[in-house]
Each structure stands twice: as C-alpha cells, then as structure tokens.
Length: 550
Image 1: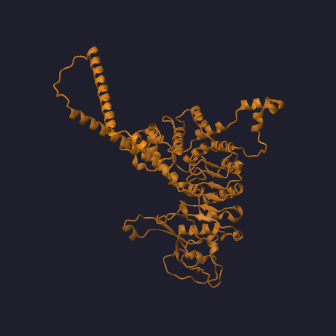
Image 2: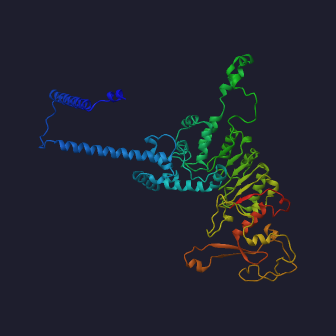
Image 3: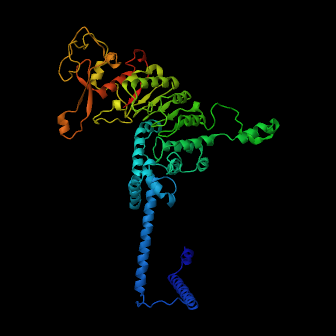
C-alpha cells in the first residue's frame, strides 16, 4: 500500500512538469517566429500600399480562433448527422461522396434530400420538358418516377406472394449499387433511343464482374421491385446471353487432349462431376424480365442459358414488345413444363388495343396445355381478363395444382366508382354477397325464380316480385352464359353528381331470382368465382381450394 502511494507523483512534481511543458512550448513558438522573420528578411515581400490598421490584440486573436473552431465544430456536426442518417438507411459501410446523390434518390426516406438536390431535379425536369429529345428518351425525371410507381403497383401481388414483402422495406447497399449499374447499362443514348449509351463491350466487361446470383438480383430490381429508372433493355439481355456462351477455344483444347493426359491432370479429375444431372450448376429457379423490351428471340436465348426445365418462377409483367398470344410466345411457354408461378400482370394478348374475350379463352387453354403445373397465376391489370375468358377453361382439369389466382386491377372486376380497392394480401371469400350465396344453392322447385314472357327485360327499376311460369332457368345457366341476362346501362344519379361526384357509366344485371339489379363488376366477380371454385363446371367440383385475389 505504501509502495503504491509513493509511486504516484506529488503535487510539486506535477507542477514542475507543467512548467517544463510551458517553457518547451514557448521555446518552440519563439523558434518558429524567428524562422519566419529570417525568411522574410531573406525573401522580402513585394511593395504594397500601406493600409493603416490597428495592431491585433490578444483578445482579437482569441476571438478569431474561437470563431474558426466553432465553424469547424459545426461542419463536423453536420457531417456526423449525414453519416448517421445514411447508417439508418443502408446496411454496411458509409458510401463514398461520389455515390451520395444516387443513394439519396434510391433511399426510402427521399424527404431528406438537400435543397440543392431538389433544385437540380427541378432544373433537369424543366429542361427535359422543353427539349424534344428529352421526351423521346424519357429524360423527364418526374415521368420516370410515375412509371416506376406504376411498375411497383402492377407487381405488388407478385412481390407479396413470391418475396413475402409489400415492397416497403429499404434497399441494402448491394441493391443500391446494383441499381446504379443497371441504370448505366439500360440507359438509352440521347441521339437514338434504340442504342445504349454505354458501349456493348464495356457493358459485357461490367457484367463479367457480377456473379450469377447478383445478375438475377439486378433483374429483379429492374422488374418486380421497380427500384431503377430504366427497365431491362434488349441490349442488356443480349449482353447477358453472350456472357453465358461457352468459350470455343477452351472446348477445342479439351477435345484435343488425350485420355492419358486427362488421367494425369488432377485438377480436371477434381472438377469432374461424379453425379451428372440434366440441370447445370448455375441453373436458377427464378427469372424476372418484367417491363423489359425483350423480343421473343432474345427471351428464348436467355432461357436457353438458364436451364428451362429448372425454371419454376417467370415474370413477364408489363412486356409490351412481345404480345402473349403469338406463336413465338407459345413456343416459349412450351419450354417451361415445370413452371409453378407465372406473372402476366399488365400484359396484352396482341398489338391491337381491343382483346376479344374468345381470344383470351383460347389463350388460357393453350397456356394450360403448356404449363400444367402452375400453382400461382397473376393476370392483374390485364384488359383482356373477363368472365367469358375464365369460364372457357375447366380449372379442375387444366390446372389441378392451382392455389392462387391474382386478378387485382382488372377493369372487369374493379368498381368503376372507385369505392372498392382490392387488397393485395386478402383473398376473396366463397361468395361475393349474400344474394350470391342464396342463388347458387341446390335447385329447388318451389324457390325457382322465372319471369313471364311479357315482362320488360330492362325494367330493373320496378319492384316486381319474381313469378312462377313454365319457362324456368337455373342460376348456373346465367353464370355460364347459357341464358343472356338483362343488362342496363345508365349514368350515376343526378343527386350524386350535384354533390361533386363524377358521372360514371354503370352497368347493371337483373338478378335471375330476386329481380333486383346487380352491378356488372359484382356480377363478373360472381361468375369468375363460380368458374374457378368449380361451381360452373359440374365435373370440377371435387378439387382443391383456390384463393382468388381481386
């Protein structure tokens, strides 16, 4: 205990050390001042006009030092705040300063962007709207932002059922980096929108550094996640195809090698797979080319590099360059017999603006013959989806493994008034409404509803009760379109328009048993549910349950 107390310096010793330190500091300052004076004497400064000024006092010097230290502390505080904000947004190390603008754009918290960044975006938007070439190449930042939101809304169901997320999670540092690379690869040239801005050789060199799993993650960011400004382009897909082509020089050298050399080569013996399979080691189960500009030929070549037999998930959402009901696309579907999830949301059957329901029914029947193992079918946002197209397929026979059908956003099943919005994760019930549950019950002679021959078919505004007659019809006859129901179309009431509501053209159908009028979109939902659940086809009643999402 005494030894510990004696080893501690006393107060006098500490004071002496402090005096020595002060003397050493003063000596260093004097030496520095002497060197400065000597330098001024050897190299005199050029003559300058004498400006009367007061000699700086010690208090003034202290004040300047305090102000400079305060400004430096303020800058350090702002830097720490920015780094703290970035750490909350991304995972991993802090990105360099050259990437900060891209990370602010890709961040979920887009409101933290600086005022200078916002002014720059406004300037680019205004110049892009005024320039003719900017519109052709999609130079408007706001227009690309709206397109990105549309892509995200179309693929909301696919993200929910495939990725298990609604897209609200923040992107990781890897995803943000891949978004920057994808935009650089898919950005078109300013002079010609059909030509990439980056050289093709340079694009292939960039893709060579990305592993296979990161390439497919980049395709997902361009597709269903909709995190990039530009979707996948045809030239970027061609670069991926050329990247996966084998090297012919290596194959020629391997053919000329003898069997003895192969036995002596221990590296070749290790690389040899003792259990060969029809699927390559790099085979992937998911391919996302949503909203891309791929041609059917490029899509076929891309599938050939990914082992089509191993592919279980394919997303063709929003593809406008390749209509679905063509011979080339049916050949693509024929190569995917093990497909389990197919997303066709926002797609079209042909290049024409009008898709006839009979053509849609034929397309679904052809698709069922090519992809019989489907478990999830997403056709949300498609204008060609109708009750007639769904009724054209015997779902119990065509897709015995079907579990989910996504129809959200289809014009035929959406309320024209906008009062009902479909939920991505909420499946429809067994019935659309109580009247639907009543009318599909077992056939009863006493509860039949029929109409007399002299009644007006479009008199849906009267309160007439159903009457019994010799002419009788089942509800299934109306659902399967064996008997055409009475349909009436009129605008919304004038009282609703007077209150500020927009005039909407509504269609109504006479209920075959209660003589009440039913909105057409509800009638279409009822027919689709009866077709998919097996109530419209007597032979499809004994089948598994299918969740339908409107």
